[in-house]
Length: 147
Image (cartoon, rainbow, N blue to C red; front, side):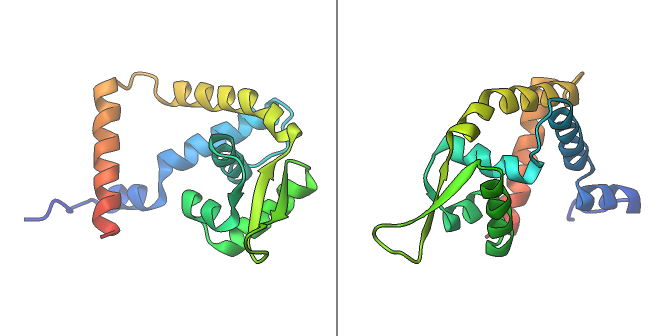
């Protein structure tokens, strides 16, 4: 028998990602309090570029699970803020390579510290074992739906 008998409120919570939304709102609040003019969505792009700079727009789509129009809009705004620049690939001019600016590199430590602070607040009274269980379940759900 499948284990999918949820009460209406529980199913709604799962679908809407209440915890994820709460974390994002708190992180956005911390960014504002620190005087940062970036959104959580923009930060996710910067985060992936901090992990590996000079990615194609398509690779950013893949890594952030966003579509091309969303990435283009986010990159347009990040360029206006002088946090990234797009450069045509030397191998294929149809491909844009996205690079961090020095201004964006300077934000890395502060924003990651704020993200860690947010997660510390979110995980008060949550054990390491509980975190591992949640990660395992969410990865399994993801894998089940992406077969």
